Amino acid sequence: MIIMKILFAALIIICGIFYIMYLGDFALVLFIVMLALPVVMYIFGYAAKKKIRVSFSLKENSVIKNQEFPIKLDIENSSIFPVGKAEAVIEYYNVFNNQIHSFRVLFPVQAKNRQSVSFMISSQFCGIVKIRCAYVNIFDPLRIFRFKTGKNTGTEIAVIPEGHDITGTVSYSDRVNEESNNFSDVKPGDDPSEVFDLRGYNPGDKLNRIHWKLSSKKDEFIVKEYSLPVDVPSVIFLNLRCYEDSEHTLPVFDTLMETFISISKFMLENERVHTLIYFNENQGVFTERVISSTNELSETVSELIFSISDNLYCEPPEVYFSENSNLSFSSFTFVTSRPDTDILTYIDENVDADFKNSAVIVKNYDEEAKTANRYSSMREIPVAVGRISNSIKDIEL
View 1 (tube, rainbow, N blue to C red):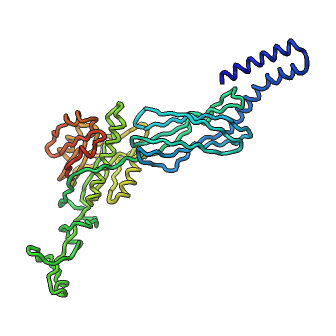
View 2: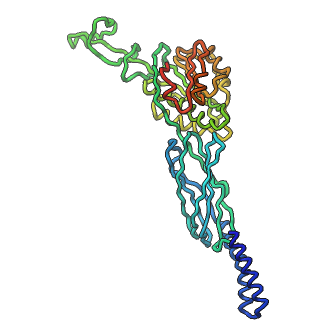
View 3: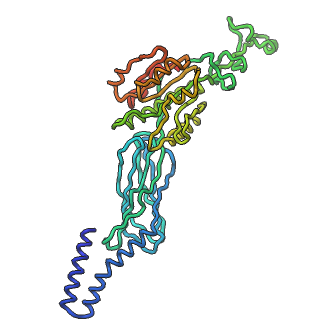
């Protein structure tokens, strides 16, 4: 573009000299045309700039990490002037990281038309990915002038974390939610309010479990197997405060989220209805979600991801415990990215639970080795970044 400006300046000077040296109508007309042409080009480009609108459109509002997803940049030109060359500068970044990725897209813009430019991006980590058009440069037909439009037009998309396979045991306790009607489909239990199955009598079966009416019809003893309640007071508490402020911030946050989801997924696989607790920044409160199916887990994870904003604010977990005292659970699991906090001591000493765990995210195996179990009634599980399955083994819930 600078070359074109220099070229036109040189042509204007040449035409001026030509007009001075050679009197005549042709020299005058040529000089006027060369003087008027940049003015016409400026008006042409400026008029097109005022009539161009830029926006983004997404096929989905959430995607899985490490998978490419399409983004459309929509350009509407309502003017009568076509633009032969336009250049859009696209930037995107994860809200948990200040690293901005950018690239340029070149395209023409037809007059009185709406068109789209598609491109693919992906995210290695979960979170909210902000996508914005820093600006769109449009050029006049001779590319003498450049005009900026569509500044800071943007959108965002949620990158959903993945669950990982972990190993452990889910124990059943006497702490049952008496108002619930959720029972296991595959395991019998001791709750007489619901019959799980009927079977033949085995030596050692209790007499009060014999179905006398049915036994008289079958001419053999039929025994009732009672149901096993799965809605016991089990909680997974996520401390969303990310204490790491370095190049490890995104990996730590990603592992924090996926540890939270992996434990919930493991409990669902073992028919354990449970409650997820986390701070919802959109609502400004700690949110409790009862999870009894994978659909409920997916909906809660999407809600959680969309509640995160650029300022990354999260109320300290102490606020929740100050408002909810005398807590009693079958199992309580606290997921955090900071091992040395008073809240872990508080949970160890004050939260009443048959099984208590704290899953602490650490950056590497060296930090994992340094993390010792310092609590009398709570198991501390160091989880190395990106090593969830290898770190969480034999957890008791």
